[in-house]
Amino acid sequence: MADARIATDNLIVKLSTEILPSSVPSAQVQLEKKPPRAAVARLLWDESGKRRVPPAATFDRAVSALPRGALERICELNPFGPVYFIPTPPFLRALARRIRSRGARRVLEVAAGDGHLTRALSAYAPELRVVASDSGKWERPEARMSPRERRQLRGRAVSGLRPGPEVVRLDVRAAIDRFRPDLVLACWLPPGPLLGRVLRASQRDVFEIGAGSGITGDISCWRYEHEFCDELDVLGRCRLDERPSRKLHTRVTLYEARGP
Image (spheres, rainbow, N blue to C red):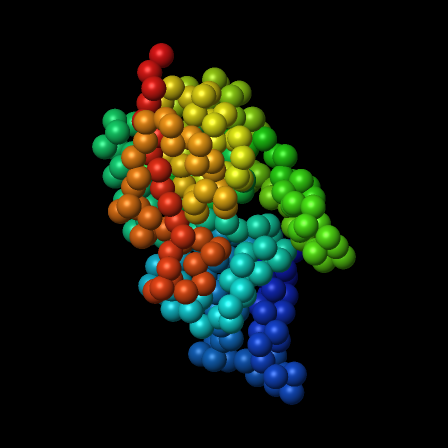
């Protein structure tokens, strides 16, 4: 925990000095004059490096003060691991309502990464039994990068996506076979075949939380019976939402159970 706290403090100092003139000592930075990058970092992580659930309005104000591109850099180039989706309290409450409306109580998140969404949903909906699983394939930073990203980030300190301590290390099919959930969550799956594999492995409802085809998921999966959840789209936040008042990127799709 001490190492994580030091990492958080170093991150705040780094983000602060990126925007303040070099003539201003970082020790003189008062909380009421926090630079925009530092303010966003404090919304995303606590002093121990654990992910937070930021209030939507506070998050929107903070990221709107950042320079263009800064939010994605904070989410990518930090000491704790990449941040893709940023659940807010209204999103979590609305997602829990949709899950309950489907008659589900046992929920499995696949490809859960650090497990933040599962932890947050469990806190807001303790009556649901939510389990997180991940294969751990993105634990190495290079494994989650395209060739172009590897070239661009060569020599930069980039974190892998480490599964959280409560995340069960299983691939998609093994996790579904083991836990036999009433409903499956899949958040920010990489573009390509993984979403299709999730849908074929599960005969239950699947909520896919992403940012649109080409960024996450696979538009070819729309051949399966599905419903777009517009009321959830406006409540979620992600690393692309640098000007939330102008455009939000979250797209939530419910793929309905196909039966045995």
